[in-house]
Length: 182
Image 1: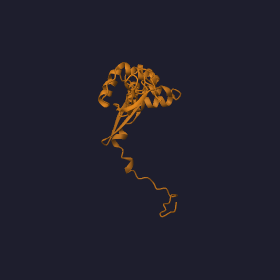
Image 2 (image 1 turned 120 degrees about the horizontal axis):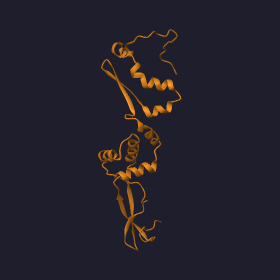
Image 3 (image 1 turned 120 degrees about the vertical axis):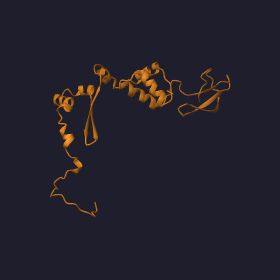
């Protein structure tokens, strides 16, 4: 049986329900000794939707400031949280991507991107520079990814035909069967 959080009495009766901002309902109790009403929920429980906390952690790891994240939360979830609350979430959950964020400190633009156009179709090529540091064991791969835009022959995109229009030689060993049981 729950106890009163004000006087520690066990003389409680149910007194309705309270719906919180996140849509969950909590049972209310009335203490017969001190006549106070309270819910017996965990006071340290987060009242912020989990999606908002996840968005905060994700955006912080991507390099957003606490002020920017607070603005995004206000616009997307219609909730106001202080910068100190956001900082506490980051410290509490300690996302593993913080190590990557620390490595991003020396890069002005962590994501490098290039746009290739082929007959009015855009192909976006991009890579994350700090994550590329993890591939130092493969220097050829790092060099290839870093310099692909400089070494690529752009004439291929301007003059070549679509792959869907190419006619490939039929495989003589391949036969097509219809009405099979398998």
